[in-house]
Length: 347
Ligand code: ASP
Image 1 (spheres, rainbow, N blue to C red):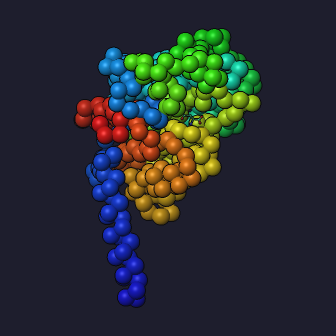
Image 2 (image 1 turned 180 degrees about the horizontal axis):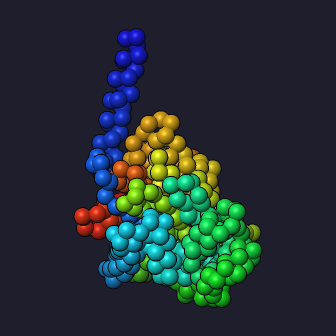
């Protein structure tokens, strides 16, 4: 009996130590009426101060705020979290700043091949597309799979065809290709040398960050939805698919625990089922949102040698972000508070 008390005391002390460690990234809401909340990421990686010019920083800030405001408006007007996630991600997919939709990274053969997924926590319904090459907004195709098919994931030409048949906007693959990503592929293929001492360090962002986009939202009905969209990794070969379209790896949402969207080296996120794993830590181990995020990223992912991060929120309106890279493009809007956008480790 005494032994059990001692164990309980040690367990609680550990939780307290960890809580204060991770508090810096998180909100801690205890209200009965959780505030509507929307959180986004635009990729994690070697995003260090000085890599982006002030103009580039401004461009990311403006676009991320625009995307968040669009989703937040849906929530504020009484809309559902699933619609807020779609509105937000569409804006990021349309912007060449991010590795999704137009401006996605290139495959080894020089085309764009995109993955996206979405999930709603109210009923665990989910949809995904992988390896699509024509759908203007892959996140809308993921939703279409969820709403209008009996499947969870469609891939390749079949997924493109399904989207087209159902009236989604499509584009020629060349629409998605930007000069910036062409340069990045050339560097990856070793065909382009980088001038040493060059003042423009923005290629370091392109080459070292992953750049996927993601969004998690909590609406006034207490429902959580999460979505992720990506071009994957530069120079990917043989139809490689990462974690982003895999429910439980790159995306997960359950009203009972949390909504999560991940970004990083997909192979590691798949092996660790990071998104579902985080929800399970909350469900089965009773961890708080921030402790669960800390455990999957700083302990499990780091131990396995993977890099990346995640954004997450729960049904009480707590939110968190966690990453083991020097930076992650991220932002949050909480009802009644100013929108926040951060890039670097210590912003
Ligand atoms: N996780 C994505 C992938 O591996 C890449 C990213 O997050 O940027 O495909």
